[in-house]
Structure formats: C-alpha cells, structure tokens
Length: 175
Image 1: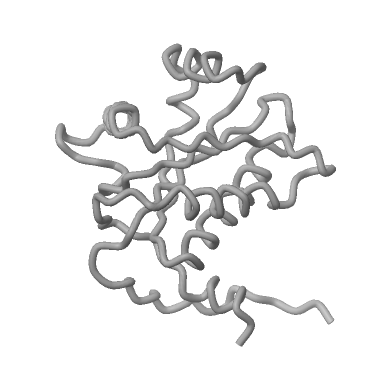
Image 2: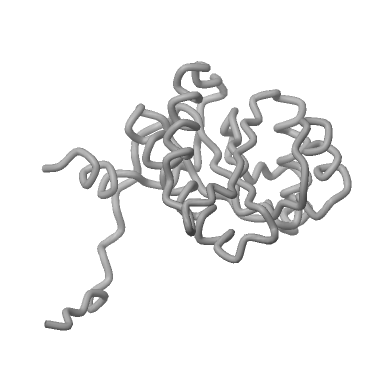
C-alpha cells in the first residue's frame, strides 16, 4: 500500500501523551510538512507557532480550558508537551481552508515520525485575546491573524487507538 495513504488510514487522534518533548529535529520535520500544504492561489498566508516552552504551553492550556468551559485541572492538550498553533491572515478568504490543510499535514507528518497528535480548537478565541496578540507582536509577526487550530504533538502513552468503522454511503460517483 502507498505509504501516504497508509498513514492517512492509520493516524488517530491521541488523548494520552508522555511528558517527554519530541526532539527539535522531529518538531522541525513536522513543521516543514506544514509549509508544503496547498493554499488558495498559492498565497501561503498561514503561519505556525511552535510552543515548546512548558510555562507558555501550560498557560495556553489553561486559557484554552477556560474558553472551553472545562473544570479546573483539565488539560485540553491531553499532556502533549508541544503545541503547534496554526494561524492564517484574517484578510485571506481561504484562511480556514488553508489552515486546515496545514493542520492535516502536521498531523500526518507527526504520525509518520511515530508521534501522536490531536487537533484542538479554540485558537480563534485565544488569538482574539490581547495577550496572544502581544505574543505575535513580540515575535515580530505583523498584521491581523486568526487562530485556526492547535496541533498538540508528543510521544504516545499507550497504544494507537483503533479506527472507528467508516460510515457508509459517503462516496458517490457521477459517471
């Protein structure tokens, strides 16, 4: 079977991570895959923030938890030590699609390297907060950006979950 299709069929959302941070080389490879995602009109109007600083990661998790309305102590990133945040230029009419393609590439690349991943929402709400706008400014990122999603990555604690059965009647041919 083709390796890319195999990865697509095998990748699962992981909800239990080891605390060990993936290597810089592994994270760089995942990020590189995100740079090659298709984009509307080839504009490449998407950026990714790689959060590996535990203090910032934990603060991000707490803000995400509060936005999501979960009880104190819940980690919406399921213990993943690295969070890759995908943002797209607000004035790009394909921003959500382009960012979603980046997210898909990140998750498939993580899987191909033996890392687990999960897409976590609420990046849009976070990057409407002044503190995250300031973070972008402090990083030298100019312009207006919309959070598309978080790709939480790390080493899997336990086994890879089994795939749910695929729903029927989801493909139609127009011959």
